[in-house]
Image 1 (cartoon, rainbow over the protein chains, first blue to last red):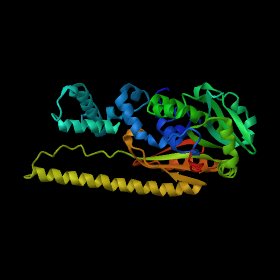
Image 2: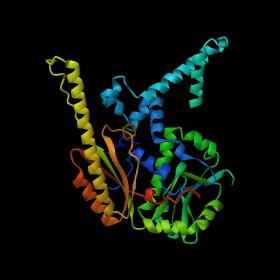
Image 3: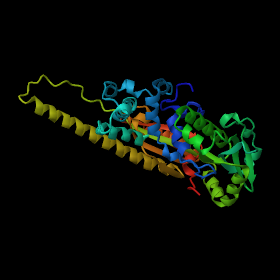
Image 4: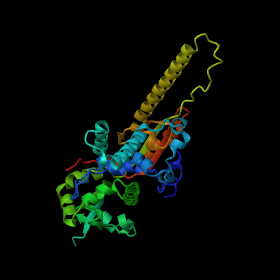
Length: 127
Length: 255
């Protein structure tokens, strides 16, 4: 875990050690390549998509992302200037709405805020 | 005895059982790996805690990138170490059996398929080639001193020209990449084309335009490395990764 997970194109000219192999490359292989045998424990690894993992990661911890070398948003003006990643932003917003609903909505009388209620359901349905 | 399950890493020739490479190879949770031999085949396994590698526990943990990275890397390291010395067929990450008997049964039931798979990768390794289209420098020219009597129109025109230029180049680079792939494939026993990774995943700004794995023997690997270096240009950057254990060429399909 040395922060150098994205060696640039010359890896093959060095020796063949792979400590610093790009995590995405490893995941691409170990998650859905190789012999697929059911085993006794049934796990559908294909449920997790690599991109989802990354997005989760970004939402969860910017530090961790930097640590493993994912810092594209810092170099990409179109991303850091606030247009951002809509999926992430959307998700954050929806989570926030969900939180507000949860802390706020209990005392509300029935039918007072039907629209918000629908949205809140959308949030839980997503998780 | 029921507090442990069996994590299966890879399948290879029975000869692996006597290999020195296993001596100090440890898997998940730093447990030493060992082999289960059944006829001509050996399974590389290690025990794992049954509770922590239960269906539910794994599913939960897959959401945890730290856990996922650790297990993925460990899995990869075990497979990788052995693959450098022996022909093996890697098994997908987190393939768990409740006991040795289940693994032995697998080796017996699918002996023919597994042997054929091993034969296919014997003496060969996997190399990945990724191609990236270099970012197009957008003409940073500011609206040229709106001398035009219709600045809005000229802006739109410029935008369209720019867009067309980028699209044409992308097409050109993609064509080149496809041709190179055809050429590389001639050097390989087999190849698999993979979905292009999103820039958010690669962590790079360049758009990925080629993502292929090749199964090559030693001579093929040398030739491939040379061709990749030679073909890397300004518009298309090629990257070679490997050698990988033959992850991409051992799929049997789910039983």
